[in-house]
Image 1 (tube, rainbow, N blue to C red):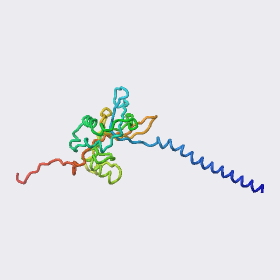
Image 2: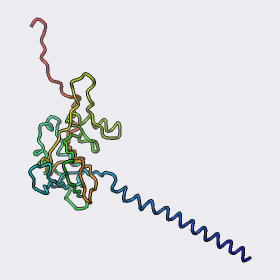
Image 3: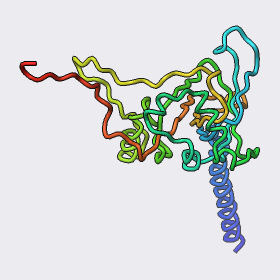
Image 4: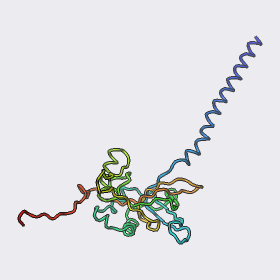
Length: 238
């Protein structure tokens, strides 16, 4: 009887050791991977620029640190209500004028800045800043380098489920090249502009890697195709 009891006690002790080992094995990977998964990937913030700051003086603007404060409480569908314009007008409106209009928009004024919904990012010389155009009904696409291409970009986004540039590279022997998005300087960023910012944490700060400034274009004014330059025609014998 004593030998039988000792055997049961030994098995119970062994089971307890195995259970503790499995529990420990389940906890360690979580502790090891959780911090890495938080800092390894990039994050994205969308909204209206609330504030642009130059953190230090310098001879070359691109080498001077800049900081953006973005109000993410503003949503695209509200912002475009009084901001979207026809493609032709969008192409002819400068950044400063668009920013002034965006700063005075109903959506921007209707969403007061609150700390939990503000995202602050820093810029450095490696930050890519570009100007793109997006259809007023496209809330997630990357837009297009041209106003007329914004609608093809939206269609491609709907078909593929992800943003896709509508302009394709020219084929062999063709002189036409795909348009490129205009590059912006940090000092051209102003409060009132809509931005989609890709960033990641570096030394405890949000470092911006890519900043597309998105200008809204009216979806109901979408052109059927790009305008074709007019050509002069003559009748035979004239």
